Length: 360
Image (cartoon, rainbow, N blue to C red; front, side, top):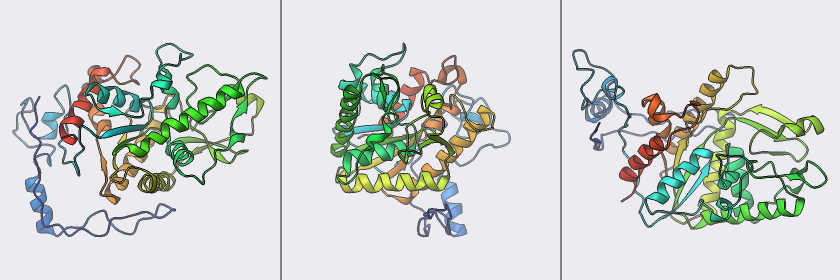
């Protein structure tokens, strides 16, 4: 299916000041305000504004209505990018495992991706079907903010006491993804230093892709810091009161993203542009009382909403709908048999659209 992306001309919309929630998540204003005539004009110029029309052929492969486009194997959303990136720009992807797929696809387009660190790619993972680079995955906005703060802000200090012993010879850094075998303290600290070295490379990148993954988070009460993902099971036995589970809020995720924006504005590329997206990969487990499917829907809805608000608040931030592409395309084409991991073909579809729309 081919959908012609319709470029919407500028309607006469009077935009109110962008709605920025305070730390309690309260919002006094709408994202945009328009007169009735401006809203009608915007609707008329938007080729993808309507879900259904009576008597339209549902199987028309070139149909513009949503109920027609959603019948095609791949859902291709209409996009109106806020800005363009250059092929010669350096890119950095930070976020969940979906960010690794983005890196691979961009590298296949001969784009320089500074986050695709060959240092970690050379490490031998502890489990099959994983890569050493997965060690750098960042699953929540707290862990993304932490890593950027420790790497970029000269006044930020890594909480050394958050690294915990597992045995007399094995240590665990909970701010990483435990894909590599556990090693002694010296090598664990070397990996930590290497992680911060790789993260510092974001300073040279004009294009930053932030992939939001999880809204269920864990806090290290002893070190007073949020960690990257669920602590390994043995720590719940040896230190049962050390970690606290939380369902994060819109306000907390918003505040984290705002601090990330401030960090990149202060220490990053002078013309940094940020693409925010939501990982379609569902939760593996939930530690709430919700059904895993319900918990996943809640988490993705929260992250999707905060991503939209964040993009609306900044001219150099735009939302890219990779989540919607996967969720609304043919399930057999987009998902592996576990209905959790996205197929390579789906990632390629997403990145082909991204490159076509965002990169000159």
